[in-house]
Image (tube, rainbow, N blue to C red; front, side, top):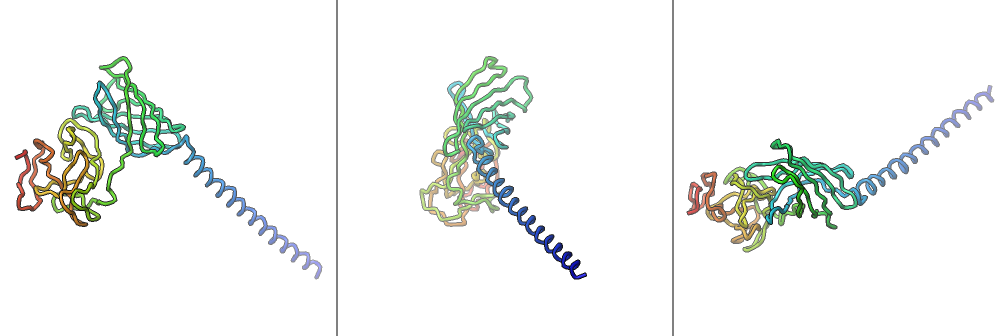
Length: 285
């Protein structure tokens, strides 16, 4: 009887030891092979491998045609080397949308595009752009064909990743003047550059467009919420927002819309509460 119990005990012990060894081997395999190696492949090969540079996001684009440049917005998604998205172009007040598909390999984006809105039988093209080392610029050429140009034509094409000067020093929050506003996160001395007015060209005034450097620009960044004041603390030097005086932290940044516009398509009642307030803002006075 004693020998039977001894054999049974040894069997149980051997089973426990074997189970422990198998469990330990399984854990080590999972950790070193599946987790560590898998993580390395995903991080170093699929994400950081040169042919899979990530260009997803919003780009401000500019193309040249007939000795004139035009601006667009490209909204891009990416999965590994496959790239797709929508390019928006405002042509004479009409928003045109193009579907884009392509691939990026070895820092070169090759893609085709065609119009999806409004519906037209012929408006499509292709382009090839090289990505800069810092990853914020794509530059190359495009070719297109449409009803007005049945023979393919081409010219220079540039994409710029928006880098908004000074956005770490401003914030968007509820404004006592109107809706949302742009507020200083820090103190700005007089004559300080605050932010750059990013956007794309439009051909008619909108409720948020401003005329800067001779072009009507629809904003795409934080300055879209820049409100009007009849006694503003900022002005535009080119497309850069600059302080007219010292601005303490927490103060709303504003400009005089009539300093950039000859007239306003959309008149509005001013609530800047300054002694010089014109009450209704309509035309330059």
